[in-house]
Every structure is written in C-alpha cells, then in structure tokens.
Image 1 (cartoon, rainbow, N blue to C red):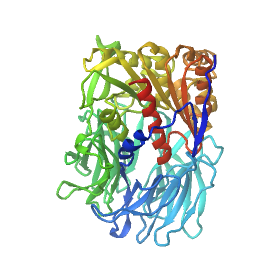
Image 2: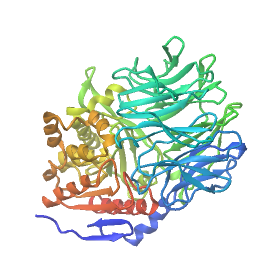
Image 3: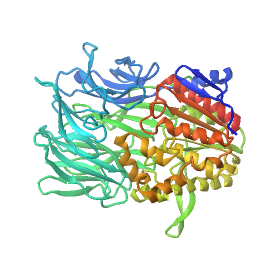
Image 4: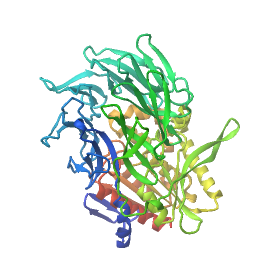
Length: 628
C-alpha cells in the first residue's frame, strides 16, 4: 500500500512528509550554522595581499585580505557561489579570472573581473561546461577545457587577451582532456587525458600545430600534475607506474627518460607547485588522510618536511611572485579551513585568516581517531583491514548511538576536515560518527582502488556489514541504534546497506544517491558516461546490465522497511533527480516511510546557506525521531 504524501514548499525547497522544524532546534543550530571557513584563491599583484573565498551571505564569494588578520573585503556579490578563480599574472594587471554556474548545473562559464572598475565580462559561450582557466606566464592568454564541440567530449581551448581577443580551439579528441601547465616560452601546454582513476595519460601539446607528444601514456598507469621546470627542459608529475601509490617523478625532454624522486617517502603525492623562480618545488603527501607538506630544492634534489602546521588537509597552494612565501589552505577537524602563509626564509607559518565558529568553544570540538576494522576477505593470510575515522562523544555515558557516514566518488576518500554538523551530532545529540574508507576509496594504493570495480561492486557494501560487526564489539556503542548516511555514490551505499542490513540499521539518509546503475548511466550527462562505465560497468553489455539491475537499490527496495530521508538537487547533472524519485516510489509502493527534500536551485549537493541550513535541520529531526 502506498503511504500518504504530505507535500509543501519552503522557499526553493519542496518537502514531502517532513514535519515542521521545532523552534528549539532552530535556536541551538544557529551557532553551528554560523561557522565560517576561508579558502585560498591566489596572490594579488602589487603586494595587495591575497584573494580568498568565504561566505558572508548566502553563498561563497571572493574577498581580498591585505595582510595577516586583516578584515575581508568582498569583491564579488553573486547569488550563485563562485567556483574557482585565478589572478592575472601580467605585470601591472589588476584583475582575475573566475568560474560560476547557475543553480548547481555545473555548466561553468569563465569571466574576467576588473578590480579597478568592479566590472566583469563573460568570456565563454554561456551554455557549455568549462574547466577553470589556466593563465600563461605572461598573463596574455588562458587555456581551458570545454564541451563546446559536441557537449560530450572535452576539447582544449585558448582565449587570447591580445589585440585580437577571442577564443580558438587548440585540440579536440574523444574523452576528457584538460590543461595542467604552460611551458615557460608559452608555446606548449602539458595536458592530461583522464580515462579513469587508474589510468590517465600526460602529453605535451604544441598550441600552434596541435601536435601531441607523450610524457607518460601507458595502460593502467595513473598520473597527476605535469609542471614545467623554469628552463623548460623537464616536467614534474606523480605516477603509480612503479609503485602501489603515486610517486614524484621527473621527465627529461632531452632523452625522453623518467626519474622517480623521493622514492623512500611512503605516502601518495597529491599536489605540487613550482616557485616562480624555479628553485623550489612544494609538494604534498597524503598520509592516511592527513596532508604532509615538503619542499624540494630542485637543483640538488634534496627535500625536507615542513612541520609548522596543524594536522589537517592542505589545498590550494600558491607561491608569491618573489618565491619567498607559499600560501595554502589548511582544514582540520577542530577548526574551520583557514589560509596560512609559509615563509621559506625562516621556516615559519603565519595564519592570515581567522574564521568564525559561531560563538562555540573550539576547545570542545572533537578530533577523530583513525581505526581499522577487519573485513570479510584476507590479505597475506590476515583479514583485510578497512580504515575509518571514529568521532566519539565526550559528554554523557554510553552506549552511544552511531551514524556511519560514507563518502562519495567512489574513488574519493573521507578525510578529517572541519564539519560543524558532525560536531553538533557529537555534542548536542550524543551520536558517535564513523566515516569508513571502504574498498574502492582513494589514498590507499591502486589495487585497493580496484577492489569494487564492475562485478565486485557489492564487496564494498560487505565492508559496511563488517563495520556493523565492529560496532557490536565496542562497549561504548549501541549496536541497536545505528544509522547510515552518504552522498552521491555514498547515497548508493546507503540504499544498498539499508537493503542488505535492514534489520541492523534504524534509518538511512540518502543524498543525491544512485538508485539504479542502469538508469544512472543512461541519464547522467553524456560527458560523464564513459568515465563512469569504467568504474561501474557498461550497461550496454547484456551480462553486465543484468548484474547492475540485480544489485541496484530500486530492485531491492522491498527489503527496506526502516525510514529513509532522500535529498536531491533538481539541477544535478551527475545523478539526475529521476534517481531519487524512482527510489521514493519504490519504497512508498512497498509501504515504507520516506521523507523527501528537493531543492529547485541546487545540483549535486547543497551550496546555498538557506538550503543547507534547512537540510541540516531536516536530517537532525529525522535522526532524533528514528535513531534516538
């Protein structure tokens, strides 16, 4: 029997079966909703400080910070969040490039913003999807990828700001291509053809002839980066060709040879950036989800770690033009993301932004513990160990209820950054949060990545079953009160876990999740389809199609008898709204209970503060009712 549906609208949100939010919940959440973070964008020219991204109103916008601890001066004022930006490096230039979409549709357009006049202009076609623009070193042109050609493949384009400004196509082929770095002379680009998380090919592209020359283009080898040395004779990147994880590598153009650098460092290289004078290479390693920053002196190949930063996630590295300082974003579990500047001359780090925590006591924020639980299969005769970050409440007495939070991707990794809502669950609700990195997660080597591909998809769901066994063994946790939550691929994991372990879970929260792999692959945007087939399987093959149908949550919806909250953005180009709505129908047709939250002005996740605030309230109300 189909359950009755109570439908209403609040602003741009469509609500089904979600009760009114109690005023007491609104009041306490206000503190957590008014935390703020700051992310580095770039150095401004003429010593005018840093360009950062932060939110003062509804969405993240660009701001100027002139000195450490200075007030943030807002530069952009859009209703839509600014996706990315970079400052024009031309001497005397006073402007920046930025990208923005509409309603979360991810059809990013590129704009140039003039800081002197406050005016901006759109450079792209207003329709297609565009990547972040990459300035040449002279600041006279940008390179970017775009689906402009056929709305499916990503070609490489150039926009010139010279005497004859405008766009021209540099290179086009099947698949996903994007630029990495300009050569010092401005004649060549390094570009990557991304085929899957386990395979990507790095090339040199001549912008005048369109000729491609391989740097590393081998089957089943993944690489990232592709940065030119100051003399244009070498290219630095990371590759997993000779190891389980990506190592720092140097390609010598003269003899077409590759050297592996810093080989003894055990962790994966996730980012790198040359100083403008070419003397130093900053690179970041992923140590079980924690970032480690290193500096290499390029001439001698010597390197050393920088230890003056809090443990967290490092992103958005940008060198100052004088090569003496490196700006970065640091995000930790106990503090919102902020911008730091590392000074190479005295090996110190200076904090430039001080993000607010809504009047909360940061000393009360809880840091997770890295744990490992045994799974169902064995490695070298021992049970495979699955990593997870475990947030445990400080207050009250156990046994605590648990929320299992599953990341998306699937080729992603849960990493311990700041989440005010996790802190609310811990402090105000007394819920423990466990964030596993099930098989298929990034950060643990190329073979771990492949453990859930194709016909092995449900092995990752079995990892959640073993995590439930681990929870049962912890005296401070209540095995009878466990919920599961996740977004995108994590949403599929939620739905599948609810079907497989219905009797062991109290409820589930599915955010923009895949409910049927066949309909997902048929309806996701065409520029994503082949990339996703590599991971999930090709639905055009009859045997794989039957397998995908068999394991899909819509096929198994009759097994779900516990309450579900399903969350979706109407403009989602990755997981279309139809995925959420067919799952809703399947659950309700079986007499199950499902709350539904749809945002008409969002895409793959909620980026606008009013929508995100209401979403958090709905999740908390749902957990209070069905988990607690």
